Image 1 (cartoon, rainbow, N blue to C red):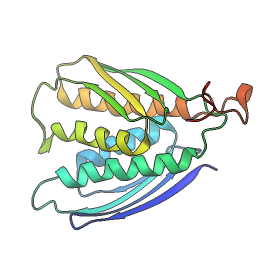
Image 2: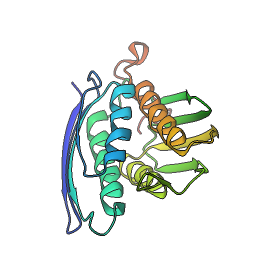
Image 3: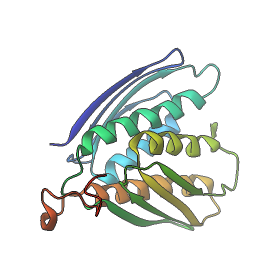
Length: 195
C-alpha cells in the first residue's frame, strides 16, 4: 500500500494528512472550511484515494493560510506516497463535465513543479469561499508534490461547477498518473532514469 502521513505545524496552521493512493475513495475531512472539505472529497472519491485531513487554522483572519497550507501538506504527502515512482504511468489526464461546465486536467509526476491554471471564475466567492484560494491550493500542492499540472476550464457559467469540475478532474488525472503500469514494473518512466 502506498501511504503517507504528514504533520505540518506553523504559527498559522496545524495540519495532519493521511493519504493512501491505493484506497477506495474514503475521506475524513475537518478543515474548518466547508467548501474545501467538499472539494477534497471530490479528489478522494474520483481519485480512488483515501484521504484524511484534519486542520486548525487562523480562520478568524480568513481561509487563505489554511487552504494554502493544506495544499502544501497534501503535496508533501503525495511525494511520500508515490515513492521512487518506479512502475507508475507518470502521466494522467481527465475531462470532467458538470452541467454547463467542463474542465480538463493534465498531470505529469515529473519531479518538477509547474502550474498552469486557466480558470476564469464567473464570480469572486462561492458562498463565503474566495475562489482565488483554489489557485493557492493547487500552487502549494504543485510546489511540494513536484508535479506539472495544467488545469483548464473550457466552459462554465456557474463558479461552483467550475471549481467542482477542476477538483474532480484532478482526482481522476491523479488516479491515472499514479496507477501502476504492469508493462513497466520496476522501471522509472523517464529516459533520464530518474524523476
